[in-house]
Length: 338
View: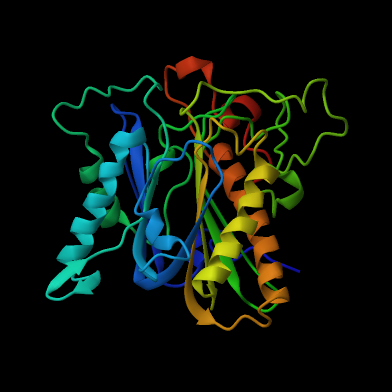
């Protein structure tokens, strides 16, 4: 039976650190996942309107087998400048893909839309995301804040403040899998207007309130509600594991882990979403069986993604003026049993 890992963060996978940086006036931020050593990586894109940088390197036909970091950012297309800040940080430390005498850090990135959340986006000549990303790298560690931090700082859902979430678990064979999620969903992570998370069946130890599912679903709870317009919504996810997976196996892991979005957000993978799931592996542990072992890991990965999404909303704090009237989960329902 899978159990919650030590920190209940993606950094329970060895060799990973996560850093956040945000700007309250801007109401946006950046989250960076750094790797002690290059990691094998893959990607699965399910949303109809994604914003990405250098993700083609992660496709099966891509020439680069490993990444040095991953970057999640607010700012929509303006936020794609963030990966440059990560590259600058890594290059100063001599980390990157060697090309002759040059050093080129490989930093795939995905962005979410937070331009209409009431923050001051009049940043002048260039957007601040490169500097925020560099600061996030400086702040990276095994422990990091959840909720209204980093890429989740300006995030929202249809009815509650969004945020940054993370969770982890171990398989019966001792393989660790963790997830990191920036939740800016077009839909809802809760059932109707109540405190019950769609991800409740996968919750461990009351980590997002312990409310379970409602005894009966309120009228209209299974009817979709949509936030904003086209291009304004995205949930970004990173899944990490210490299982030894090649890029095709990681691609399958990312596809299976994407199911976790459907377990936590309703609706999801819409034409107006930009949902992206990255998957990385440090390759430290041998997978017991390439077929059933990967199937087991991917199933657990979907559960961990669902938990990370729910935690991102559960831990979020609202802006003082509550843009668009969106409260934080704990302000509306309390912390629960967590």
